[in-house]
Length: 352
Image (cartoon, rainbow, N blue to C red; front, side):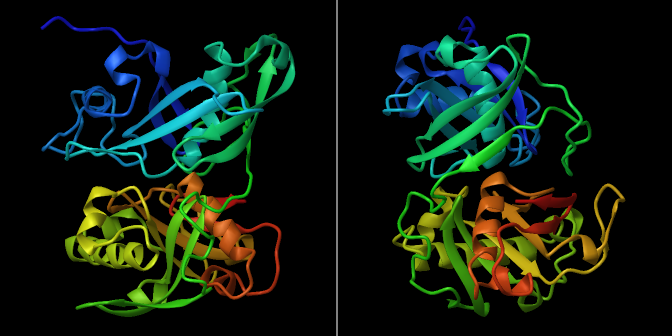
């Protein structure tokens, strides 16, 4: 068969990378949800790859880089662009459409401006271009502030982000009404639940829908310190299976699935993370993180592996939970009320 050509742009946004498409550039059969769309995205990223490397594709064999974005002029009143995110499995033939990618949100505005999806009168030659995004996966509004220079998106700059090697332009993101689009912010009505996991144990858990559905546990209850790096967990098959089992039962308790078995078909959500009070540790880059520089420690799992930094949507969940007195996240950060939080992750720190 001859190859087909589809215009696309390969972007980094935050600590993620993905392939961006305009919906109207996709083959007609792939402009709507379904098998044709999923097959194209799987092939572009190089999945399913039983070797787990995605050598024959644009994925980089991690949950942070096996991602696809489809944008279109918005169908919503008072919005500029519709943003649809697909988390592409690496070794299995499926695309998970159940949630957003907060990191790639940082690149959505840049792509929309560069591809002519934003009305020209709204785009300044210099300064900040405000892009109002409709996040289709979760039916939420996100606002991105994109730096412009001489009529073009400014991509270079001195903003540094732990988990990313080189500095770049800073893109500020506002997640309005951050409760995820799958029900109330605290689906059980509790700030802390007792999560019973057959064969493993019962854990205190904060179950929250904010940014993305997330299950927060205490690191100590899992025999962790909260300062773990990727190799400490991702090389431990038993630990990974334990996390997945807990995640499945948490998803059931949150009402996201009807049976535990369904968790395998929505690996992107919910996320599972563990928290601990601050203490000194060495990040994966060798950077020394001091307890005095952070409010708490957080480690999060993404697509079955410990994330190398922090997912953008999980960062929203962390900040939201930290701002609500009485959650596990809030208590790990010392309790009380707060309007911002700085947490330590495997690559360094992040303030939200």
